[in-house]
Image 1 (cartoon, one colour):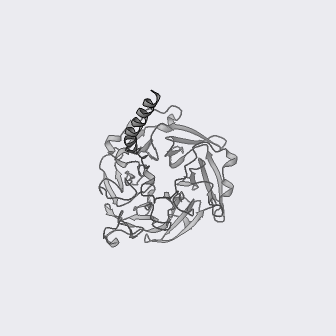
Image 2 (cartoon, helix red, strand yellow; image 1 turned 90 degrees about the horizontal axis):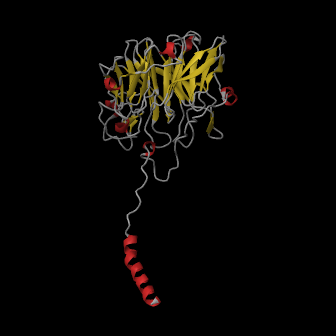
Image 3 (spheres, helix red, strand yellow; image 1 turned 135 degrees about the vertical axis):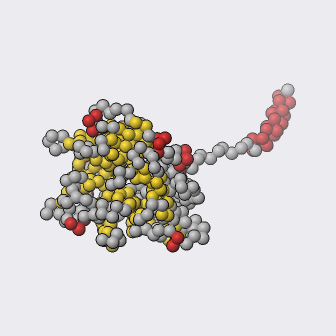
Length: 408
């Protein structure tokens, strides 16, 4: 009896073996949006921002290096993930975030110190903040929220007016997790200017829907395409004299350490095309040019270094800094994550002549990047000119707002 059972067991195992061998393989994990196109075997990945409060004694203000006569101080800290800035009529500084879903408000106390409040939370990537009169607009991927009379209600923020449908941006699903965060600025014409990033690293796409700079009336009407073929602009400003739109722009990933450059764009006429995906930094894409001549498109106004992650920019309109900085473009370079040697992690100045040509790009704020050890202490994301002429710089990695002043 025992022999018969053994033989039956062996037969059952032999019959089952082929079925087990042909079992379907496990479904591979989906590739995150940032990793699409990453070369096989590469270990490069983003440096995740710190999303906890950095104690004041750990804020690296002492590492900052500036030209002679300039000083740096901590304006506010305790803003995890703080990025873009906008100033209200009463001097409140509103700070958007990307990852943490909050908007902060910074006010001054009677003794000159600052207070930080969280005035919006639970919103997906509320990176874009802009003041229109007494109203704060928050741009979060495709959502647009307007908070009226907010400075008078910082401790009890009223429910926002929902303007999402009026602006009609592509949804997060349409973007596929790529370049969907917004930067916003108010033009002297009363229009809100913002970006719609491309839905991929590099691909074909609807050129009236993605990779755009666009503007609207504050109610979301009268959409106007300001520029096409702009891969991922998360910083823009209107020149105070010429009234032309200027913008920073990120080049594509996974094409090598030194190509393409991130760039500064000058938009002279609404609707012009800056060439993505066929050209990057004014030169043909080696893998995706499709036979297009880069002379078909507008060249960049300036090259800002490969993979430096150029973000917020503003023209200096104050009077505190020396005259040589008047109407020049201050640009925050957040710093690379997919480059073997770190680049960026600083603030530079694009020097612009009377004809609107960039004559050079100079370092302004340095010290956060440690080249010897390939480490960084903070990531500048945005700059903002205050009414007294000082310059605010947001440091996303430590959740700090730095204030730069000048003394003769």
